[in-house]
Length: 100
Image (cartoon, rainbow, N blue to C red; front, side):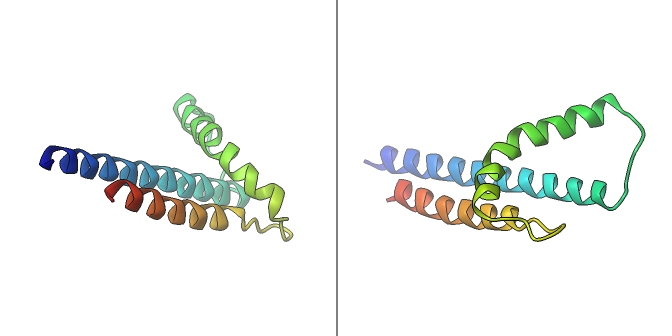
């Protein structure tokens, strides 16, 4: 029985870390978008392009769900804030269910 509890704890920790990494990726994506909206235009770099495309490909499908629900207010987009809050709540619920 102790082995099963240990495995459940490991899976819960893994899921918690996975949700944390995804939240961090969303925050990095939002900060990069802010930097570009304020006029930061670095020279072309293949590595930077790969990183930005990765962030866009990973974050935009999830954020798009909230952009359909929450309209933008001028230049401000509040959908990432709501998306992170929802992800945090889902993370808490899922991890607590796995831990038992």
